[in-house]
Length: 131
Image (tube, rainbow, N blue to C red; front, side, top):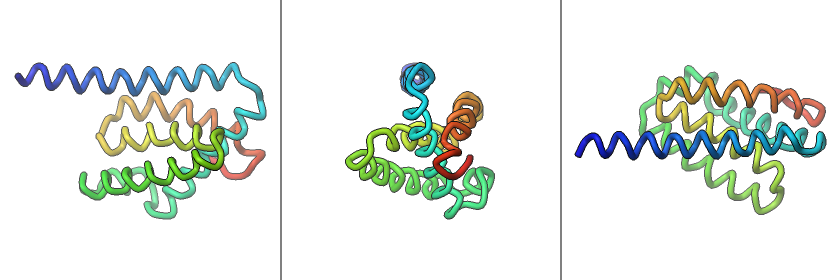
């Protein structure tokens, strides 16, 4: 029974990584202006995160309950943005993968995601902000 749960968790994680990589690959081959908007979404989400928590380590040190509640609020925010600006919401969604890694204390996933978010953040700089 416990082996099944571990397998399920791994499959969910693999799905998250697969989706993240797919979006990143599409973004890298996409237009420069689209990359800038998506990067701006990453920067926007990061700025909002830093208004609540002083750093990723500050967030990591919080209880699972608090981290999960913040993540739920983040998901609602992302949905609201998606209705208004799909490109911006893609960057916010990608940032959400990083946030999920923090909630789950998944250091390996965080490293995978952070590398790509830094690249996108730089792309979004002309529109304001940086990760």
